[in-house]
Image 1 (cartoon, rainbow, N blue to C red):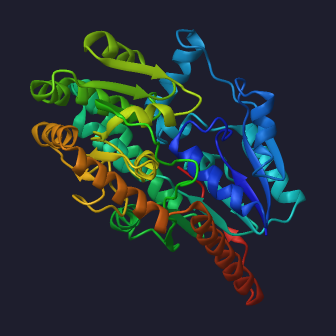
Image 2: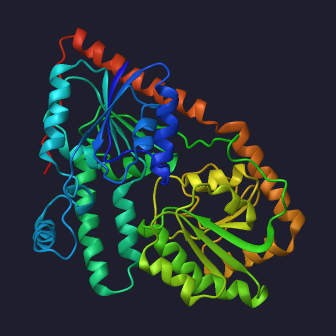
Length: 422
């Protein structure tokens, strides 16, 4: 197959869960199929990262994206437009005439078997009709993320803004899913949520592509962990992660330290916000690393891996990586949402601060229980969630969409029509 793959940015460096998922899927699909990858330019990308993209695509194309510096009149003028824009800010920020023109040129000049829209933002730049099947690769239920932001907002103004964006995202996501021949979700939980929210307008099948993990790269260490050291990894400029660790340090860590005074925490991940950086100043024993070249030594050091998420969607790749490394994981229900884990067997789940703290303390103090949970977690992901099997399922779903399109054309069907976005 020849695939046109649309994304908002490059995949390298692999510092976000969505990038990791797409990279591993594309890496396997590209061995048998031809991928043309289109994204916005990234001025910070190195030559090595651009060259590395060619490991997962035959051709890499980029278009410029102009972002106004914060604090300038142009920045505020653009921000003012988003206040009245019916499209949610998280998508409207990627609206681009140059991107749309490039998509139209490629579809006009070349023959593709499918267009893969990776995440929602590229959909805002699609033409009104596609000559081949359109596939939306979702990594979250975006409207649910904004709804949870609104529920957890700390003040009235933030709550109102989040509710506004939630309503806009709900409308945009509903309209967008209805445009595609196939929707790919990353969990059964997301599939059920799509069908619950958008049953009246959802015409395409929703196929679940499970989360995978590289079990060779993420493997246990022979070195013993630091007994009362806790670890969290994730992109720290993503608001759900910021909220999770702010909540953890404020509400859960004091309860842990009441029982284990020497407990320490490492927050590992790219681009920590000022609020995240302040955690290291406000709370004793909290380390904020920023981006690291390799998360594995940091995760190995931890006795317990924590995922105190209150907001989110999709699946948490970081949990599978920690499980593959034989770590005992304590997560909220939302943190483990969408993952086929067994609470009490290969992961511990707790949703209130007391319960979360108690689960962490128990694993700190009970080394055999901690080791048994880590060993069971490792076994679970090794047996069922290698990326090669996940990518093959993804590939088969695309091939089925292409066959349905060819069958429809043979019966006199029209090219795939795409309704105009609001």
